[in-house]
Length: 132
Image (cartoon, rainbow, N blue to C red; front, side, top):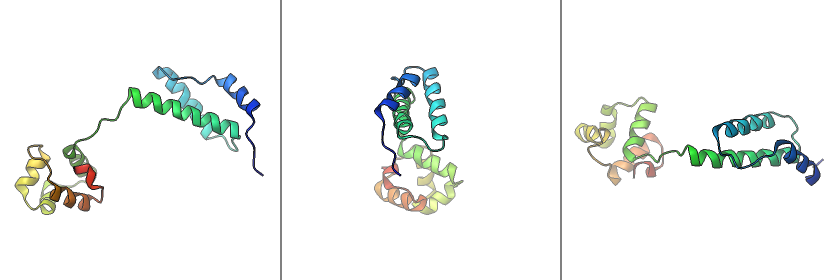
């Protein structure tokens, strides 16, 4: 049985929770708490699902504005992957072909060229764009 969306029921939910553009951390926390409640509610109604989607959109908008994720550099991506996978500079030298160049890249003294980017992407099994 497919449930149909009921505008009157949705209007009551909107009146009860009064969602709006989030402008403070406190409002964001309240919205997150409501999202968690709705996410864990079994058999959500279509109206609750719509409210959930609205709240998630408002939270994402607030967090993208107030907590932007900085774009990483190819070097910072490499260092992160090395840390995450416990990779040594010596192991990286085998991929790049030179310990001296690997050290320069890791230390940020040298940029990663296209050939090295391809080799690193293959080694870490990631998209080459992380290194270009």
